[in-house]
Length: 272
Ligand SMILES: [Zn+2]
Image (cartoon, rainbow, N blue to C red; front, side, top):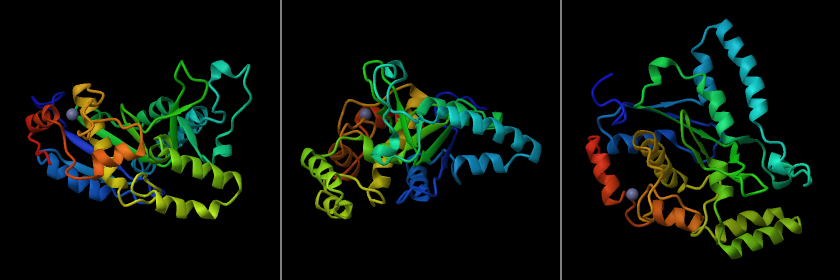
């Protein structure tokens, strides 16, 4: 512990998800070290493999049993808000082609118990990338809302929520629905190519550019409590659409607004 604790990042840990096509945690870590040269940035395998792997057999078995229960409870098998299930039919994630969906904060709570005390300081930032979908039930909606970033300890970043949860260009959305309705799924790739300048796809080489913004959002959220930035030119801006995410994170000269750049500098950081 030192005097900076609570005001600047101490250690940043990025957890891979080997199933996430296009995700490159080493590239992100390299970029982050340039932004925050004073802060050690470590890449790790996926969160469960890393943290279960450092435990002894008995402790691991106890955690596995608990995790099985907690992850089961966190999994979403009906997209309808629990408050509305009496009056609405079940909506299965599989009907949308979504494999594994978790209630974001429940998954976060389940994973948090694996963080060791020595890595749980105010300046220790854990960022877990996952292909699982993450969501929440807002009080004003009957269906689950996908969440790209679930900030906290650890921060969760869902690649699938990013790609499926942001608004697509209207025409692309319409054409995708048509293609799916007529079972012409082999045309999806062609469509994705056609709209690639306005929409991110799976395995997209721009994925890591967009993830830079989410990594910074997680760090700023933890250390400043700042939920984001209203400026669409700042990497901390929360986009509602694919087109906006690409404009902010992957076009021209992405970076932080003046206010957030000055906070980064106060951490010994180097804005882009
Ligand atoms: Zn900003």
